[in-house]
Image (tube, rainbow, N blue to C red; front, top):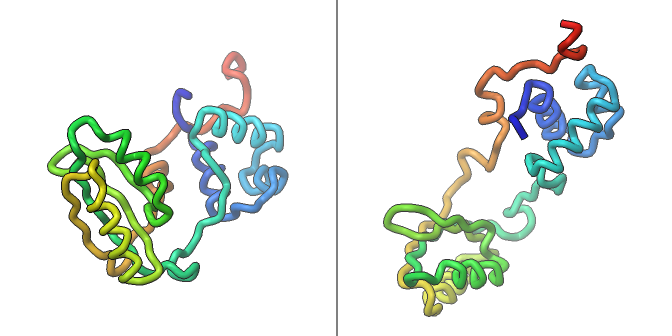
Length: 166
């Protein structure tokens, strides 16, 4: 995909504000034809830009008020094994391989401090993790987001007619 233009970003904004909106209403809000919206959404999905339409979950309200960030040092050549281990642990919300002192950074959630401690102990017992460090999250200052990044630059607006008419 060559990139997102202003209409693509506008559609993502509208979907973020109204995640259950239909294509017809999305077209009305964006001021474009329904077929245009359908084609754009199909392209954004097939190119992997839009990866889902799931609900956003408040972990504290769902019974998991304790969150932590853990950094892991992985045994040499065992990154895939760590990925498998972390994928099996329900309390691991996200994990990314990184450069620098630590090999993996992951975000954890638990129902209590005791449950978090249990997750951290399970990590430390693994033979593929050499060392872990964790910090408890006190509050979320900026939740996961993508729109500000997409909105930061001016993007060209789509042409209303084929270029040969212009």
